[in-house]
Image (cartoon, rainbow, N blue to C red; front, side):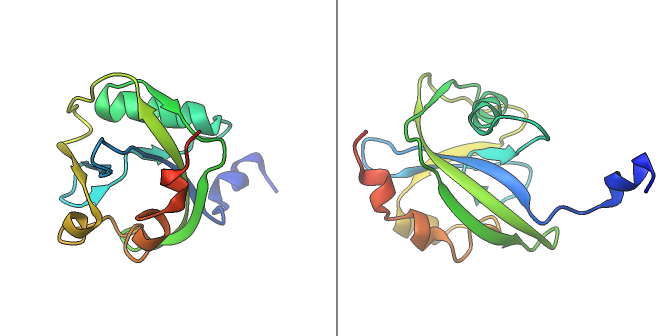
Length: 144
């Protein structure tokens, strides 16, 4: 097999890292990127990249904010991206914002939603059917 052939091999899952940020009312932070659907802040894991460093990079790119990963054990959610027809593995960490988030070129909007509000919004395809694994969730309620 030639060296270039490895580029053509499709991975089993696209791995994405997401941050779960709660406000003082218990709502979770969502972002709108280029589409009109809402998703958690985060993005794709680059080859060889540390998971928590990838999450920090994504928060800087999307919201110009520094974060602290507040839990060692992530939620791991295998799901499907209907837009790209790909399996996705979401690795979601409880996160604390260290600075105030701001809109960037990568994010058209961000907002905190409770479970009833977000169900009325258009969600990213990877979240549809998976909110019950996240929201409400004992994972988010545990004190560190």
